[in-house]
Each structure stands twice: as C-alpha cells, then as structure tokens.
Length: 195
Image (cartoon, rainbow, N blue to C red):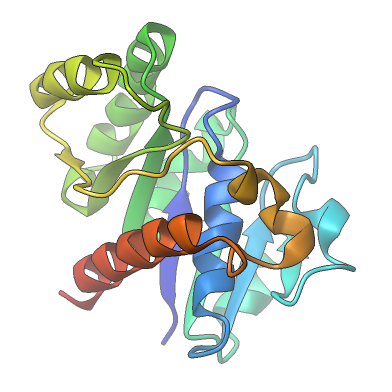
C-alpha cells in the first residue's frame, strides 16, 4: 500500500509545489512515485510533459490511491480548507512548508488548526523552506512555533536557484548543496513515514 505524503499550508508562496516535486523526484530512481496536483492553478500539471515523475490531477486521486505506487505526493492549493481534513486523514505524513516570515507564522496557525481539528497533529511536520542565509529570523520564528505543538523538521531548504529550476531539470542533482539538503530532508521524511 502506498505511503501518502501531503504538502499543505493555507498561505501561498511558501514553496509547496516545488518542495513536493523535489521530494518525489529525489525518490523516483528507488521507488515508484507520483504526484497528485490538487491545485486548480495546476502548477505541477503544467510541467507534466517535462517531468520524469508522473503527475495527475485531483480527478485521478482515487485511481492513483488504488494503484501500485510506493509513494503518492499530494500538493494542495493554499485555499483547500474544505477537503483538507479528508486529505489529512488519508495521509501518512503531513508536511507544512513555511518560509521564515511573520506573515507565514500568522498564516500557519489556520493550517495547524485544521490539522488538529482532524486529529492528525501527530502526522504533521513543519519544514522551513526558502531559508535566507545569515539571518536570525529563522530561529526567532522557529522558537515561536513551539507554542503550536507540531514537530519542526531539523532539516531546512535554502533559498537556492537550483530548487526553482528543479521542476524543469527533474531535480537538483546538478547542485551538490541543494542535493544534500533534499537528501537530508527526504531521509527525515522517510524515517517518519516508516514508523
């Protein structure tokens, strides 16, 4: 049975789609993976012709779940609050990507509330994404997240151009720093999913 990895945050611009793609792309040579793009904008659907990872629309979710994939990554739009509880229940892990910003901290509260209302907080992990170098803001935001009682990943992804380009290059293999970061995060996610 496939492990389902949900990426969600009620705020746009936190890198959900890029993170989802990079995690899936990082596993594609060792496991059968796919992505379901729940966003009506179809950010990931728009690149499926270029992608080495199969990408499906939300209409295909039930068929994909009943197929023989090892990992199914689900990318949500920032406004999917109606179906989010159901997706949380379906998932083995819920990744909440966030940037280290004050507005991101305020917006994450509504995402966490939905996850807690569905009683899935033990599956959730906050991942700092697009982290700026040489700033104390990330640590300040991380310290404030303690109040939400949701696990925070030890691994963070930097604001590297390699991650932005990754969707057309099918990953970040050409950039050692980006590859190391996505490898470390992938290992952490797989460890949690295996529990």
